[in-house]
Length: 525
Image (cartoon, rainbow, N blue to C red; front, side, top):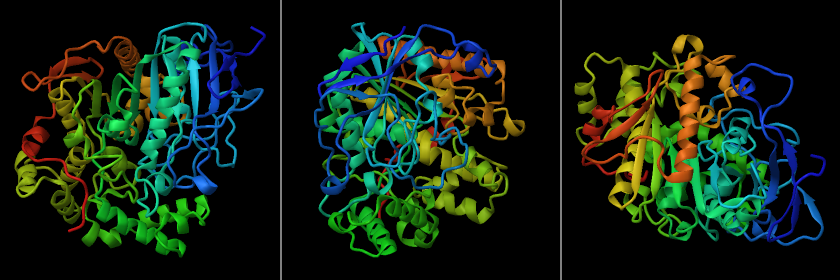
C-alpha cells in the first residue's frame, strides 16, 4: 500500500499513514518480528480548535481556520503543560512521550488536537469511540501508549482520542473567562467529530464518548451539559470521580495560584504568565494543600487543586443532580480503587489512626458515616478504613450513583466492577485505580501496564482484556455490552475476574452507608 491516506475535512486536507496493528502475541507481551492484521489508517495531531494562546488564552475554543494544500497528520500534537504529581508509571499516568511511529511531542501551543484511527476510511456507518483521557484534571494526554487504539480499531471501531486543556488552563475559575474550559474543548472536539467523522468511515449518529477517572468525570459532566446534548449517543465512564467544587471555593484556589505567580486572579493578568509557569504553580499549590485543610476540607484532602466547577452554566449542577436525559451508559469502578495511591506513596498498610479518623470525618456521609464504616468493618485497621472510605467517596459511590441517576432519567445503565488483581509485588496493588485502561485497550505490553501486569501478563489478564474489549465494541455498536442492565431492584453487575460472573452489586456496605446521602460539590465551611 504505497500511497498514504488523505482525507478532506471541513477545514482542509490531512494526510495520515497506513499502520499495521500489533498482532495478538505483541499485545500479550511476546514480541514478533512481523506486524499482523489489516493496515489501519491513522491520523494524528488534527486541529479541532485554534491554539488557545494570545488573545484566545482562557477563552472558549475557537473553530480551526481552514488551510490550503495537504496538512501532514502523522505526529501527535503537543501536550498542554502538565501539573503533578501523579504516581509514576501508574496505569492512569503511563508515559506521555512516544507512542508508535510518528509520535513526536513538540513544544508549541497547538494543544487542541485529536487523533483518528479507522479500519477503513472508505467505509460508511462504522461505530465511533471518542476517548477522553484521565490525569486528575491536572495532567494527561491522548498521546499516551496506554491508549493505543489499534486493537479497538481492528475490531471495527473508528477511535478518536482528544487532547484538551488541563490544570489551570482548563479548570481554574477566572474573572473574565468561561468556567470549565476543558469541557468546552471536549464539546468542540465532539462537534468536529459530528462534522467530519463520516469522512473517516464513521457514523456521526453512532458516537460513544468514553473516559476513565478524570476522563470519566468529563463524560459525566457532558451527560449533564446542555451544549453537549445530541453530540453522542452512548457513554462509557470507567471510575467516575466525585471531585467538583463550588465557585466560592474555586475562587479562593485561583487567588492562591495568583499569589504564587505574583499577579491578580483574573484572566487578563494570568494570561501574561507563561503556561508552564502556571502549570508549575498548580503543582506547588497541590503540594501545599494540607496547609488549607481547615478551610478547603475535602478538596485539600483530595490532593487536587484545580477541579471542575459547578458554575451553573457550563456545568449546571453535579452530574448526580443535573442529569435529566438518560443515554446508553456503561459505567464501572475497580474493587480496590484507592489502593494504588497508598502503595505508590509508600503508605499502604501504614496509615495511622489519626489519618483514618480525618479521612472518615471528611469523606464519610455526615453525620453518622464514620461510625457506620467502623461498625460495618469490625477489626479493620486504620489503613483498611482509610482505603475503604476514600475508594467509596472519591470513586465507587459516584460511579454507582451515575448508573442509578442515568437509569432514573430514562437511560439504560450497565455496571461492572474490575476485581482482577494486578500480580505485581505479590498482588499488593489489588484491582487498583486505572488497571482497567490497558485491559480495555488491549495495551498489555505498554510500559505502565507491564509494571502492574508483568511481561508477559498472566493468562487471566489476557482473558479479562479480551472480555472487556469485546464489551466495549459490542456496546459502541449495539448499546449492549453482553450482560443485563443495572436496575434498582436487581442491581445486576458484571464482576470481571479470573472467572467473571454477573451478580448482585458487590459493594453493598458502601451502598447502605451512602443511601439517602447526596453527593455534593466541595465547598467552603
